[in-house]
Image (cartoon, rainbow, N blue to C red; front, side, top):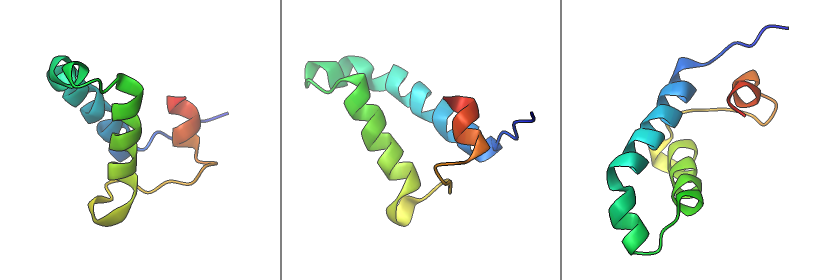
Length: 66
C-alpha cells in the first residue's frame, strides 16, 4: 500500500500549525480555540478565491495526514 503525499497539502497543513503557534496566545484571549481556528484555516485554503490545495474526500493525502 503506497501513500502519495502531496507536498502542497503538507505545506498548507504545516503553515497552519506554524501560524497557530505564532498567534495562539492572542486568539485564546479572544476565546478562539484551536479547533475553531483550524476549521477556519481549512476553509480558507480549500475554498473560494484563496484556494491553495485541491482534494477529494478519498484522497490518499487526506488519509496519510489523518
